[in-house]
Length: 325
Image (cartoon, rainbow, N blue to C red; front, top):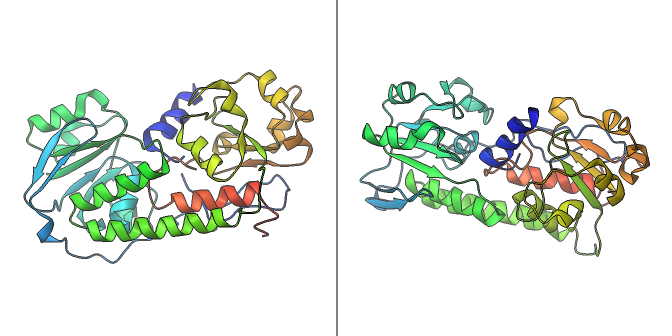
């Protein structure tokens, strides 16, 4: 089922394959197109801070590891890790990356491995001194690598924006670029605060349905996506479900009459036209007013610097009058 793939990407990779700083904000219901699909910026490579070591860290699986020095042969099993490592100046330490890695452009030539169906033998073949894992331990990978004396850190998918910041800092510290990571987070906070500041005069934002897939799974309270909509003062119609990733019925969506529909499944064929063709959906305000927006499939699915572009893009779609294109 297509939903399994999409929801796994949403939760396991968190922040949802390219996001952007701006989209089609003319109320025309067109696809929200990034201005730069590889928006992640690679920082200048710099040597790690040796004074930060030895470093003790406990990962999200409870694994405690001591690093005597910064790792310089890293296998990054999530695209977000690659983006963060480049952004803090440690991109040259990556010897293999998840097969879905698409940013920054400098990462194009890195050998690729699967993060969803990882091969212990393939990963070990790169002789890594650190393997970064995200969100689920496929096939007991962490234990297998630990048995081979390969240091492995497991990070959960952040459930909040603050969690994204914390994960970026943790990764930066492990690779000896803690100061750069702190600076990066400060810049992200400032950029996101600037977006929110534009909405100071907004008292009630539009109601929104965030479609993960066409069987109507969505993001509700307790999800990272819902938090972002809250920051943007939008009303998520999935709030009534009380669940982080519920499946809504067509009747419930139609009855909630969302003013905006965001299609995170746009990469899989859903569009303003396919939504309008669904039985009864032509009465929904978002459809009537041409405010159905396909967005890049990785929107809000990566805990990386790209989060800034994700939030900027959503702001332009929710408030075209505030962010004229």
